[in-house]
Length: 88
Image (cartoon, rainbow, N blue to C red; front, side, top):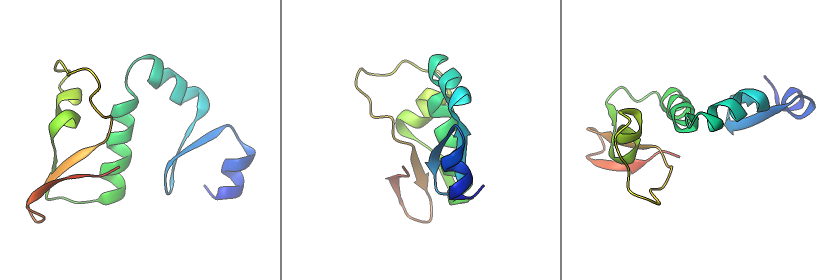
């Protein structure tokens, strides 16, 4: 999808080259699954096979209890980088 199409339709840009309809995004947010979508978008865009989801990102996907106010960023650990890095 190009930028002109996204502007004309009911689309939300999540990341360069990644779009979702406003209706689908509303459903995901209502169901508390927005972070799941963000994870898919980030991991697809980065294409880093050595990376693993970490911190709050992993906890959310496993549906573990989270502390109040935890940032919604997608975090990865990349064995080639040697550190946890925010990917958002």
